Structures are given as structure tokens and as C-alpha cells.
Picture 1 (spheres, helix red, strand yellow):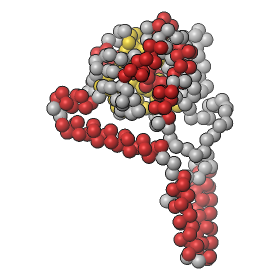
Picture 2: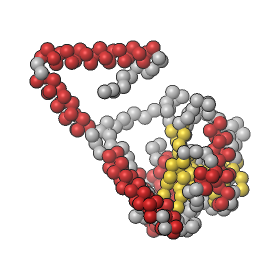
Picture 3: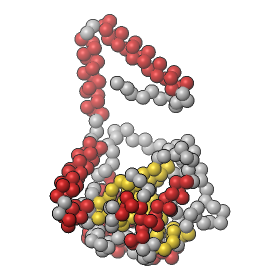
Picture 4: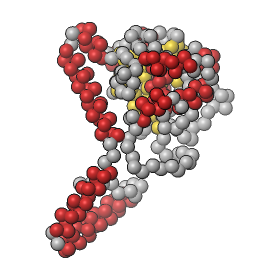
Length: 305
């Protein structure tokens, strides 16, 4: 599996989808589920009759599949991933591994709230989640409720289970059923559901992302003897490791040393040159702020070369 569970779960990887087209999904078959990222409508209220905006709540399904309530704020991506993965163990070569299988078995009889607590307290899941966290020396511990002006994003999962297309969202009280769906029908059935969800947003909203959980493409490459594809997939995994190493690295010290070096070089040119450089930077910043105010910007100056 691509990512931190590669020594524990086997046979799957995640691929970004660039089009809402069933034929495109079929090219990646078999597809076990998709993970949808979208801007969460903080002002949206649930219907007065207690029903979801689309589909139907299936409270009884929590006893037949893995569904966990989201109990912490910053792990919805990991939870959406697990919502697909833990419901596909043993299907078409998917092996979630001993540790995740033990976790799933341990929480089998729990209600969604307790499953969510168990998930957030799992050392295995926490360690893997944190291994992808971006390094930041500045931690904002301020706790506040998001407003309409905040950009809040959320991950949810869609996957076929027991002949039904389910939406698994830890912020909802139960899995949401979107009708009958055989495994092979999933690409055709999930696209209209996604399109209906996207249609609830203004036409100018384009901040969406879609990932598909598919069979490890290296398996496909070996089966058909496509060694170029196999080489691309192996190279892709090397790139993933390098990108994740960069994401975890703290570059503040490096940036500080670069800044000190630039200042030192300017000072070596003499006091007049240094003062001229400072004043020029101030004028450039003020000009940029004025332009942003004219265009309705938020007043924050962006860094530029």
C-alpha cells in the first residue's frame, strides 16, 4: 500500500482522479472506494426532519460494517482512508495486515462514538498519521468555532458494501445509503452521487479533490508484463518517499541562515547600499498592499521574488 501502512496493509494504493468519468475509473479497476475532499459548509444546517441532504441514513449498517464517528478535528483524511480500507479486507487481494485486523475485530461491537475514540487512541494509527504531518515550529493552540469566512475542508468516503453504495462520513450519525450497488457498478453509481453533492455549491467553487483506492498497480503491471508501467510505479513510490521527507523537514533554520547571509552581503556593500535596499523593499511592499486593497484582497502581502 502507498504510504505509512505499506508494511501492514498490502495490495492497494491511492490514485488521484482528474475527471468525474466512469470510463476513467474503469481504467483503474478494480476500485474499492473513493475519498472526496471538499470545503465544508460551516453554515449548512441539517434538515429539520433529520434526514441527510442526499440518500438515507442506515443506522442498522453500523453493525455490519466499520463506521466510526470523528472525535478529533485534524484526522478526517486518515479516517476516510480507513473507512474504505477496513471494509475491504479480503476482497480481491486486499490484506489490511494483522495490526489493523486486530483493531477492527476489537472495535467490532462498539457503537460509532466508541470506535471513533478507539481510532483516535490507537498508537498504530496515530504514528502513521503523524508520519505524514507537515513540520511546523509554530503551533496555534487557539480553540475557536469555525465561521463562514473560514476555509474548512473535510474528507469523506464512498464505497460499495454488501451490495449498497455507502457514504461514510464521521461527522454524520450513521452511514448514508445511496441505493443498490454491485462492486462492478461502483464507477457508474458513485459519479451521479458526487455530481449531486458538487451541485449544491456555487458554480465558482472548484476546490474539490477525489482519490480512488485501487489495487496496487504494480500487480496489474506484473500480470500483463508491462515493465514500463512497473518502472513508473516504482519510481512514483520513490517520489512519494522524497516528498514526504520534505514535508516533515523543518526549514525555519535554513531560511534564517539564508536571510542572514543576504543581509550580510548587503551590509558588505556599504551602509548607503543597505539603506537603499531596505527603503526599496518598503516601497515594494506598500505598493503591493495598495494593489491588493484595490482588488479586494485581504491585505496580506505575499512573498515574491
